Image (cartoon, rainbow, N blue to C red):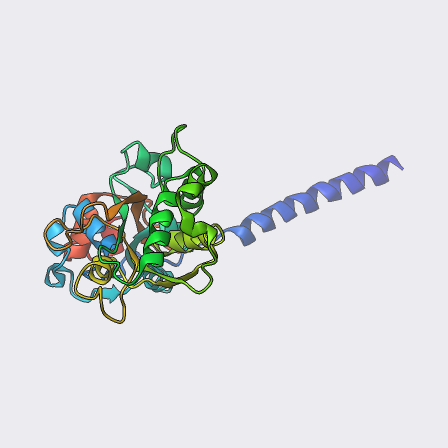
Length: 318
């Protein structure tokens, strides 16, 4: 019996060692990422607030509105979603998206100048690739008195405890205060919300980066303000001013409230007093394909050189 036990123990040890050796061999993986490949550069269109924040943040302001300064062969996309799907489908791609879109994007977000893109780092000013999310309402409400009252209530709602919670839950970055009021504390100031507004349509638009927050806010607030219809048509920050107070404010694509993922221009997008403000902060994140194992951090100088065509292969960043 002792011999049998010793033989069994010996066999167990041998098979255990063989098993461990086999496991180490089969689970080892080798990356197929070719570092000598050209970097495929993706950018947003020249009206994009994300683009403006990105190029200004990397010290390449001249490229905000000038594609001629970009590397040959760059690809322009028309929205946050298009940027995500493009880089996700391109192993050697690089681009930039809103931090609010990163979690569900399937992409790898890079640290910038050694600082991770997080809400805490945006608020404490250590992450510098950030931009404001702004709103602007109409100044001419002729024939739109009910819509004006609803939008006024909506703007007030954004600054309440309830509204700020919705913004934060949808990746908007903002500070809260003990002095913030609940909607229930101020709702009696807005008589329109006690009416049946089921036949009233409020038209939202502007930045695609702000779309997620705007839709969440409008869906929540509609139930608190007579169940108005929230119609969203987000086509970029450049259309926020244009369709609210600018050249298209009386056209077929007019909006009641528009959002921009950047500051409004003090020269070409001057809104009437009391019609605009900041909703929250967001950060821009440099992103690469999930299979890219070359870098986890990037500097402003490196990104600028990539977009200017001075760094062209991934091996130059390894």
